[in-house]
Each structure stands twice: as structure tokens, then as C-alpha cells.
Image 1 (cartoon, helix red, strand yellow):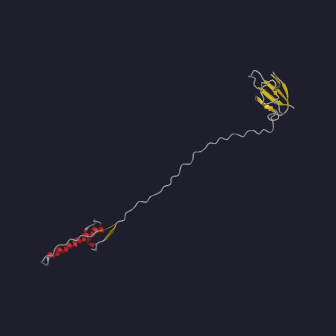
Image 2 (tube, one colour):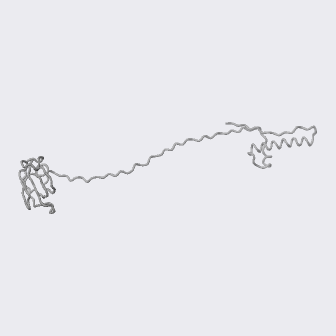
Image 3 (cartoon, rainbow, N blue to C red):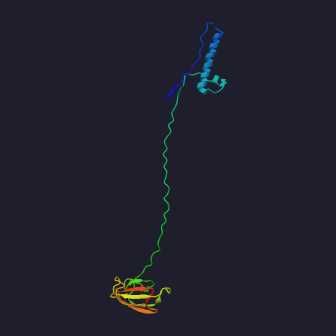
Length: 181
């Protein structure tokens, strides 16, 4: 936007007398010109001595520039993801073939879980348990209480032996077994 300021020059009418009146008119014009110069050139500040040195010029054109604020885009980064805790299980022991020792109660398939052959027990795994029991089963997936499925069974108080063939099952309750042949 452009604004234009026109200086106001004060003049006094000319008098018929040449002399004092004319001096006052010239002095008035000079004073107005000096004040206008001071107002335009110095912005209204300064002393009379400064103003006298300023030349009288034609009206100035003053240009005002409107400052438009710029838009600043700020990128906000998301916080890093929270750490994830991963629990790694230790690797399971590698069992190469069927086992040659039984240390827990359960039903074992001969040829898959345990090896076929002659097995020996020296007694109970836990002395706190009242008895140990084993049964050789014709079908390891069949019922452990079906008398037709049980080939032989016992509740040994001490040492006992069992001969197992592939495909049979051994039901073990609280006895420790080791393959001996």
C-alpha cells in the first residue's frame, strides 16, 4: 500500500509595504519549509540547527510494505517404540533314538519312547510314595486297567526285571528303570 504525504507550507499574504512585512513573510515561508523538512526527513525529532541544514525538497512518496507472516511447518517425530522383551527358552535336549533310562512315571511305547530289551529296576523313585508299580501292555494306546491288555504286572519292593519288545507299552508308577541288555 502506498501513501503520499504532501507537506503543508504556511504562507502569509504579501503586504503592500516593502520592508518589514516582506521579511516576515519570507521568514514564515522559510520556517514552514524547515519544519516540513524536519518532519519529513527526521521524523519530527531533532533540533532547529539540524533542521536548518536540511534542504527543502518536493514532497516525498512514502511506501509502506505489509509484512505477511510465513507459515512454518514443523515435523514432529513420533517417540521410538518401547523395547520389547523376548524370553528365549533354552533349547530342548536332543534325544537320539529311544531312551535307555526311565526316571518318571507314565506310559512308554517300546521302540519309540524306550528301547526294546531287558530292563532292571532297583526300586522306588520316591521313598515317600507307598508303592511302586509297573505293567507290560500289549497295546500302549489301550486301557491300562483292561486285564486283556496287561501281559504282566507287579508291585516290586526292591529289584525287578522286565523284557520288552517293540510295539509293547510299559506303564511305570514311581520306579526307576535302566536298560541292561
